[in-house]
Structures are given as C-alpha cells and as structure tokens.
Image (cartoon, rainbow over all chains, first blue to last red; front, top):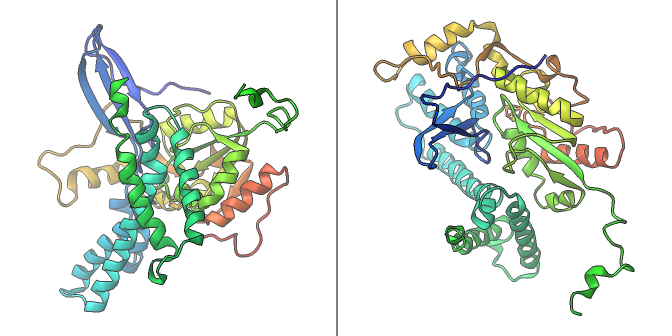
Length: 191
Length: 196
Ligand code: SF4
C-alpha cells in the first residue's frame, strides 16, 4: 500500500515548485518549498517544520524531577541547553529564587562544554561539506575528517602544555581550522 | 609519464578491493541523539568510510534512499511522512536496523500515546501559556498529518536488527556495525547493551 504525500496546490499554473526535503545537517525535521516562475524568479519561499511531538503536553503530570531528563530528548544536538532550561523552570516551581554559587558554576560549566562540543560538531560534521564543496557533496565531510585526524596525530607528538592536552587543544585547532575554511565560503559564487 | 602509475596493473588496484557497502540513515520521530552517538565513534569514522559510503543521511544532501546494503532508522513513526520514508528505506535496504529507543519501541515521544491527539494540539497551539494572539493549529497541506499514536518502526515494516539505548553508545554502534560488515550476526555483550 503506497500513498502520495499531500502538497500545497500551486497558486498559478505558471509557477514551478521546488522542494528541499528534508533540510539536512540540522536538528529538527524541516523542509523548504520555493515557488519559481519561468524566468526562475522566486515568488515564495516557505520553511515548514514538519514534525510534531507534543512534549509541551506530555511532560505535564510527570514527577517534576523527571522533566529535565525528558526534555533532553527534544534535541540530541543541544540536550544540555534543554536540561538547563528545565532546571531553571524547576527553580521557579520549588521557589528557589537564587541558586547556590556552586550550582551556578556547575551549570555554566555544563553549558560551556555544550557550546564547545556543539561548535566542533557544527564545523566538522555539519557545515564543512557546504563550506568546502558547495551543494550536493558529502566529500567535504570526509575531507574535514581526514584533515582533523591528521592534526590529532600530530598533536599526539607535539609539546602541548598539560592543561591543554587532549580534547582542549583539539578544540582550539578546530577553531583555527574553521577560520581557515571560512576563506572558501565565497568561492562558489565565481563559478 | 608522471601519472603512469595510475594505470599500473601490478599494484593492488580497485578490482581487488571489495565493493563499498552503501549505508543510509534517517531520523524519523527522533531527536538526532542517535545520529550524534553514531558520530561519537569519532576517528573510527575514517576506517568506516573505507568500508562504506553514505547514501541518504542527514550528513549528506541526498534526499531519497537508493539501493543500499544497510539502513539505520532513528526515531519512531509519528506522522504520514515517517511512514512514507520508512517504507522507502525498507524497499531499498537489504538490512534494516532500528537504532535507539525511539525506533525500537517509540521511546519518549510515545509518551503522548495515552492522550488524544486533538487535545494535545489544542493545548499546544490554542490554550497553552505564552501563545501569540490568534494562534491556531497548523494545517498547511505541506505538513504531513500526525498519526494518532507514535509507533515503533517494526509495527510498520519488517526490521532485521534492534539496537536499544537512548541513545546506544558510540562504542555499541561501532561494535554492531563492524560485526555486521564482517558478515557476522551482531551480538553485543554486557556494557554495550543498555536500555536507558
Ligand atoms: S532513542 Fe533517545 S537519543 Fe535516540 S532519537 Fe530517541 S530520544 Fe533521541
């Protein structure tokens, strides 16, 4: 049993519908639809968020301490941010108008960790393919990985201060590399 | 000539190396956590990329799944489009794997199953807190219709392997895939198999 998915009807016969479905390398399930005329002039662009999960409703009635862990599953790319947001909401519910300095520092530390991890992920896995090769290629993904693996190997032999050993220096290098790659960003405009 | 080595027949050339396996992955009603866990195999992605190439996946820009050897499904089935994509994967993938709690049994999104869909939509878009004036339930034809309940993927198509965990660890995914690629029936021991 197969079926066609419904799409919006075209407002005019002269328009052509182009769909980018799904939008890749982002969390969340989206599609973009574009309406073009014969001269490829854009008449309409719409972003559709196609998924509905209902977290807003089904967390209601749960034991309150479950919620920070549940909402992590809103997004596997930034679970910490959702965890912290829910923790802040719980502060209000239990009447903790001020958290202890230790709690505040721990939350900050978690969030910095999330930001660092998220940037590395964004660069190496999600945006490098676009920056390097423009549309339609997963090659860049592979290349960035190869380069990064090479650098990691070199770092193993390098004389890095103890505090920066391991992931820390890898992240710093990642930052430098992403700056370097930014130079490629404009290239495909000249094709 | 400088590039003669390209035609060198004495070197172990492409003919000797086996065909790369094709792998497709998709996130249905999941949170991408399972894909992130897959990327947590880190530098092991390199040896993996020598053995496999990616077809449709959130990591590539390929929009439809072609004939593949391995299909990884993250997330359960919560709307008509999920059903559509899942069937496309089943039709094209020789081995289909339910990756993570959502795919295996619906996971956290299935928490909505004991509620009426209409009530959830009403609350989220019309009666909840902090809504903009005049908010209404989205009903654009481009949006896939939500199903009354969230279903595990095996209720819609046949699934060959189930890899539980929310998410399964990078190590578990790595062990699973390498065993599968070697042609063995994957089996994960204590420590890799968990349900939380
Ligand atoms: S199983 Fe867990 S990590 Fe995987 S998609 Fe579902 S909620 Fe996210």
